[in-house]
Image: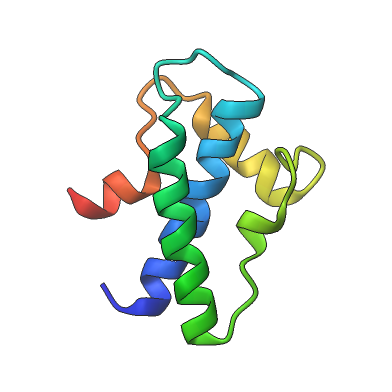
Length: 90
């Protein structure tokens, strides 16, 4: 996976993790803080390298009122949910 694809994958994964942390804490898909921190750090390093804004990690809380937030929430509520990063690594 090239850096740009990895950046996009990490961004969606961050939003998914934020959904479970803020909207559905205790859900089986909620991951440990250290897992999230590692994903976010990698995302920020790539953002700097690619000269892009790390939008997903800039949100405080979960962006319910944004189109990306609505899309992520709908996806996370599916019964067969898998994190985007896990789908890309399968």
